[in-house]
Length: 161
Image (cartoon, rainbow, N blue to C red; front, side, top):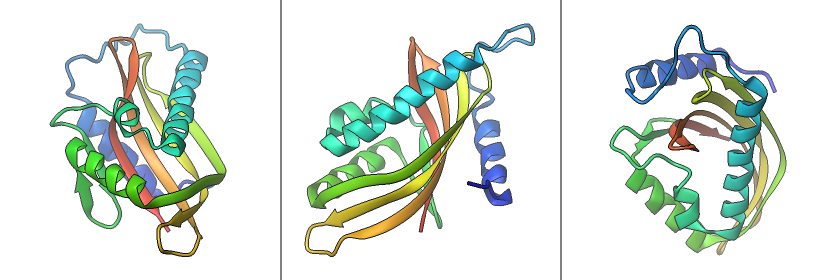
């Protein structure tokens, strides 16, 4: 999947928004273990999918940073806080009858051993209560940070069509 110019701009904005975070240990001498970072971030994405299928909102929300800094930006102009994302998932899970990812790709860009940028895109089939099944495509840009040994999503931008 080709990454558009607007997605790259959002990626830059997300990275800039996170640059002043005090718990990032990033030095110019640091050797980044790219394969480990990519593996661990992929595990988080796989876990996110599993927990969504299981509708386990409490475990799913542990993958996101619960702070005032967390923002999920969803096209066209919706910005959600951690609490608002929780409520969105709760509403979705109440109405969701079936969800299946048909295809997806994950590209991880390690920024340090404790921070990574991920582009996750794909297509899914969903069936909501009282509606016909439908297919939807998405692309997400996700900024993750390793805190206390665990990767957390600290900023996210979603676009569905």
